[in-house]
Length: 456
Image 1 (cartoon, one colour):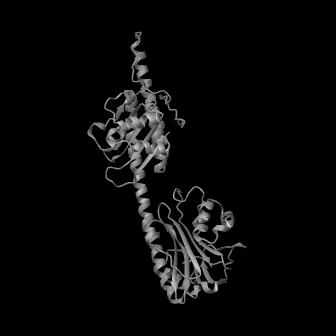
Image 2 (cartoon, helix red, strand yellow):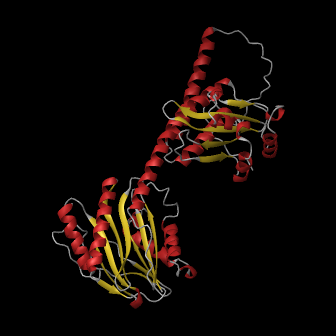
Image 3 (cartoon, one colour):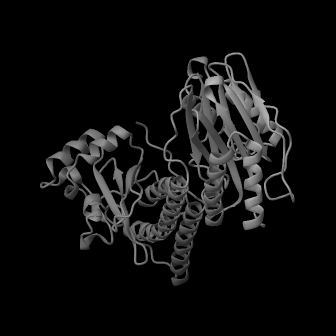
């Protein structure tokens, strides 16, 4: 595999490793003391410029993966190596854990992981041995008599002859992991390179610690949001269900529900509470629980369900607004009656049509003194899928709403006919087409919900 292109920074040439064989010093020509001081000052300025450029690039990363990649590349430039790997393994055991490579394929990383941990500088750092604070250099691995046979075999196979391992640790963050850089020939970083790399690693550790805390907070938010939603979807003859939910980094108020009703009927609901964060998530949980109660009592009348919900919201949380859509389904008769309060219209996808359901315009819940809107009735044909969704799916695209609606229509129409009998495949294809860069990596504050109902 060809070596990656390493970044060039002031004072560092990443293409030239430092040889372990130091040449004989040349005879120095005496010069005035001022010239010597100027050279020293120029060197310090160059070093400071190098650290500034690298730390600025690292500070610009906003995700853990991008920060790990930047750290590996910058460290390689500082110590004059071409390849490396980084293991994120917090000493407190509270993940996340990860392994990243620079110039190494997944197969090559797998080979390296077969080496006994204690036989590499990386393993010694991760094990927290006391002599690893300033890094561990292996200037000539193949020349070491006591090198582990498996380490020698892997080094020969991967074509590296020297290594330098550095801990990712600080007093505040503790030990988060370690980085290892690999040299193609016997070499080791000079003292100045080690010093710069150590300063950079300590700064990088603090930055990684902040990103790790952010990842943990996002994971906690996503877990709470999932607990507020249905753990499983009901099984009703004549209809198949699938749902997809993605929570924004701060947690939002988008939700869905599917509940069995008497006489093998089904209630489907999606909604969105204004705002984000714990307050919006709590309001979402209360709203969903209330709608379930109203649906059990009078689910065959979606207008009555939303009217009761609007009254409750207005009396208990007058400063809160929300959108909602509730559909009463009779799968055996393939009949759907729905009402919406400021919510996006459903989309019907089948072999012969892909179109939005014509719903009447209505205000969101909590915005009018008395909410009411007529219901809409339609009949899905056998094999058609009804998509309910929240406006986060449209807003995350970054397009204007009219273009986002057109994009959603195109995404649904592009689902292969062989997949249209599977609501899960339909939902996944729509998500990938609408948001091709991945929902979990998005920095948008918008939640996304899709609820797909396929009628047999």
